Structures are given as structure tokens and as C-alpha cells.
Image 1: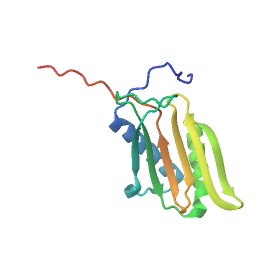
Image 2 (image 1 turned 135 degrees about the vertical axis):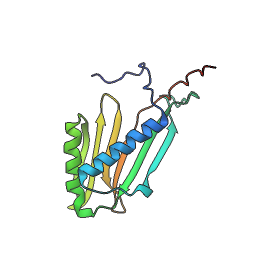
Image 3 (image 1 turned 120 degrees about the horizontal axis):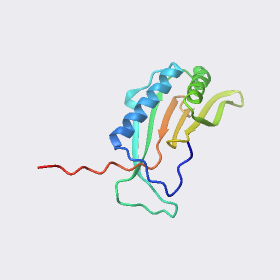
Image 4 (image 1 turned 45 degrees about the horizontal axis):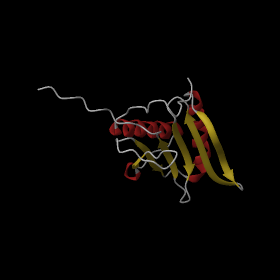
Length: 150
């Protein structure tokens, strides 16, 4: 599969479907990592797609950033991120960035992307010591409502 080009049609996906996929993906990453997510921490943020020259179309296109946190103990973060990295590689994701420590302190980050869908995923240690699971979608277009028959 090749990377979508700038003139290719925007993928069509309803907002609720994009959010359901992001929720499923974060749950799957957390399960792989052996950690529990805090459902009260879910932060789905829909935003407008912004073009190369800061243009915004009023046709419903959107991006989703979906974040959820785990209170897994800090010392478990490196092993958790290693497990997620292995799973993502097996799923065909490209690992764009990876670390476990900074100055011998736990400070994990895993960034990965899926070329075919242009979805981005991140698992990282937050400043507060939580483990963040994040999914970002590319620009998506909601489906065109079908005409209702009378």
C-alpha cells in the first residue's frame, strides 16, 4: 500500500465510528501492556482539519485526538511500552519514536504510525507519572447522509 497523496479523496468515517475505533485501539494497547485504563480520564477531542495554508472547509471534515490514561506504577511503564511496541510492529505500524528512560529515570514514549490509514498512536509517561494512550486520526470526512425515501 502506498501513502495517500494530497489530492487523494479524504477517507470517509462517521465521528462515532472514529471514536469507537480509537477507544478499541487504546483498550487493545492497554490490554497488551497489561494495564487498566481509567474510563473517567477519556478525552476525545474533535477538531477541524486545517489545510496547508490555514484554510478550513465547512463541510464537516474533522480530526480526532483520543486520549485515555492508566495509573500503572511508573516502574511498569518500560515493560508496558515494550509490549505495545511489539504488538504494533506485528500489526504493521511503523515505529516513529521510542525510549524508556531519560537520565536513568523512567520516561517512556512510543510513537507509531500506520501508513495505510495515517493513524498515529502514542504511549508515554506523563509528567504526573500516568501512562498515556493516545490515538490521532488523519483528516476524515463524515458520510454523506442518504436521502430518505417517502
